[in-house]
Image (cartoon, rainbow over all chains, first blue to last red; front, side, top):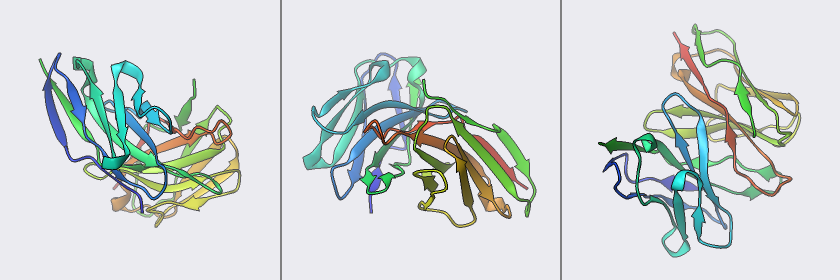
Length: 116
Length: 114
């Protein structure tokens, strides 16, 4: 069965500092990998995705993530965080079965706190 | 832009009531999904659907059913609501025909069962 681990429940970062959120996955085939962000009281917004090709993917809001197959990781990074980045971040893995796209398996999330 | 709407942002129901949560998407997506989100547990897949009248169980289908009579609409049904179904419910949709499987989410319905 597929699974996603986000080892950090909470992370606190100073505004302007760099950020890395960790994600490890388990999946039997080539995974589709996603990072979503959820602001308080809101639904989930897609930050970026990886299907194939270049292992470094760029997303919205200045985020990027790197797929490392040997480490089964898909860590999210941002060089300089802004107070508006405070939110819950979810890593997810999914795939495709014969009938269509499967539901995603999500990690439990990392709560990002930005210190002024 | 893809838009996924959910019929209610907040809902309060009593134990034993039948509850309907409605989701509509406007991008002609083939796939639709229902998740529940609980603190410390992340999102868990309840049911999904590849096509009209098709449904597949997710990881936690017990106590729920779904209906998809039209391509744009996917309903989640709690036949007899219980307090342990108090949660945030998120609907999502995705396209298979474009070859991209990212899911687009609605704003969520926070359901409280008393």
